[in-house]
Length: 171
Image (cartoon, rainbow, N blue to C red; front, top):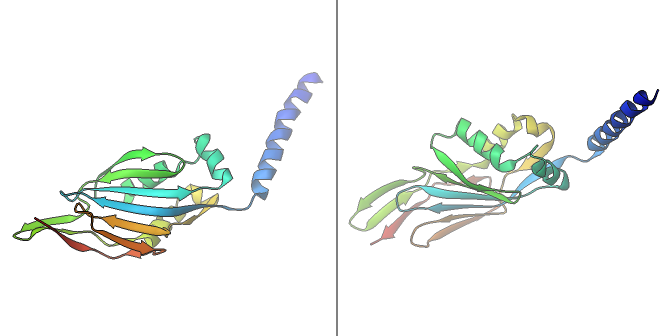
């Protein structure tokens, strides 16, 4: 009789936790800022800063949900340029993308052309991921900055798509 009581307590706790999780409102992963730091050779450091809800923080710290890992996994599946994760934590992810921008030299300097980007495509890709059942995504960054080696910056606000940018870094 005593062993049956010991078994019921963990099952009851599991049931309560499951019901509480089911009753929680849907959580959301929100990209607050995105920065693309373009290097002289066309490589780029891409940094995504995001906000997570309490439930997502718990999942992150229990290693259930890791936005940085998720971003990298989906990037590797769908991108045509190699990249390496430089850092990832509960506030953001930074990775290096090789060959991100096209670079050409001429008499005026280096002309660098970035690719256009659509965060809508990323949202569609993430919606196919199993974590989409537990969370929603807002991938239009509050602020997007594209920075070139000479300090020139293009800034966008709440945009789902970023156009290709051509900039010449003067000699």
